Picture 1: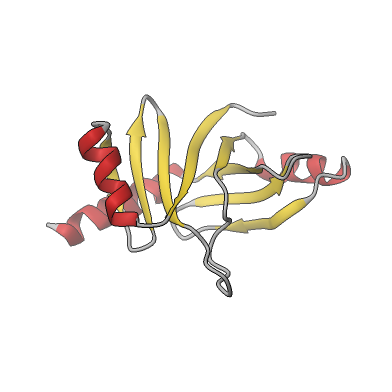
Picture 2: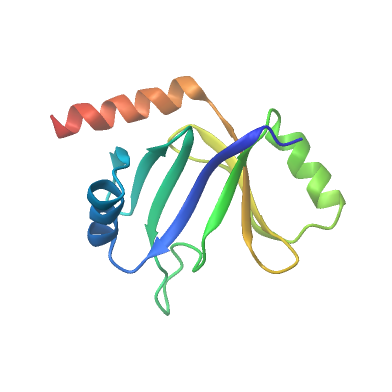
Length: 133
């Protein structure tokens, strides 16, 4: 069912300060940076940073999450739903090439499953690099 961990995302109070810590202090290579997300390479697993949700906002979860890659996200999504897994966010497509769903484990920890269209993913990443040059 699950192939590998794709990304671990941490919620931070100051995106710029946190990104500096992960890049300068920990020495992780920054893959990309957007206004609401920064991604770092860490041995084949992406370490992501997003801003914490403040009261009244519906932007992101307030706790860390783990995202697993799967071969067939629709199949895994249906299997999990049939097993009664509590969904946090329904199956959807992301503009960067991912198709994903978010759910919680029995303790409320956030878990995502994703299938990635790698061609679209690398195209979006390359376009971002060009914009910054």
